[in-house]
Structure formats: structure tokens, C-alpha cells
Amino acid sequence: MAKGQPKVAKHKTAPASDRPVKQPHSKDTQPANYFSWRFGGIDKDGPFAWTSLDDPAEYKDVMERLHCFEGMDQKQLQMSGSHPIAISSLSREAQRRLEHIQQDDVDELMSFRITGPKRVFCIRERNVMRVLWYDPAHGVCPSKLRGT
Image (cartoon, rainbow, N blue to C red):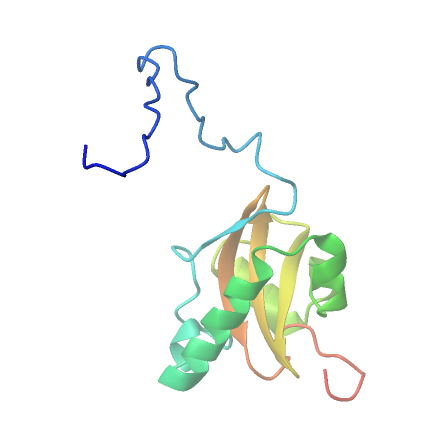
């Protein structure tokens, strides 16, 4: 050690077997407001197909908005204009599409408001949002309110 340098106390490191092990979150211990997106079942055909989202800038905006939803609780989601919608409230076209893609065994879809009329529809399974449709014109569940 050089002259004039302060002494640094050395700390003993506990053996690996004595250190607490940080457990990863299991699906049963995740906070209730935490959820994740699953894109494997997106509808690639029909009136609400993700293939219609072909503008890279718009695609980026949608993905960034979906990312913002991940940390929201139920109250924050509702304040953002996002909420569950009963299948019986969907347009007839959307109900027929669910039948066609064999996803008509659910009671409701989760609607995420992107902007104005733009929505992303998902099937919720616990804390997983199975992304289904991109609806730029509010056709899945038409609203009678202006601007939604």
C-alpha cells in the first residue's frame, strides 16, 4: 500500500451456500397489475388483421403504447380508455371472425386504447394478454361517442 493511502477494510464474502438466493417471480407471485404480451396468435387475416399495420412509424407507435400499458394497474388502464368488452357487445363482424378463427369460447376481450379510435384487442389469460386484433377504425366494437 502506498504511503498516505487510507486503509480499506476488507469484507468477508459469505460462502455461496450461505448467501440468500433471489428467486425469480413465478406466475403466482407476480403483482396483480403486471402482465405480458403474447403475439403468437395474432389474426393475420380478416378485417382486423395485424397485416394491415404496414406503416413502420404507426407500428412503432402501437408497440410503444402497448409497452406503456405493462406497468399500469386496473384503475390506470380504465383511465387510459382500456377495458374488457363482453363478446355480446362486439360487432357482428367481430363475432363472426372469432368463430372463424375458433376463438369464440371466451366471454370477453380486452380493449387497449392506442389513440382516438385505434384499439388493440387481446384475450386475457391471467396475466398474459394474447394479442388478437389491431383495429384502427373502431370496428370491433363501434362506439356512439365522438372521437373514440
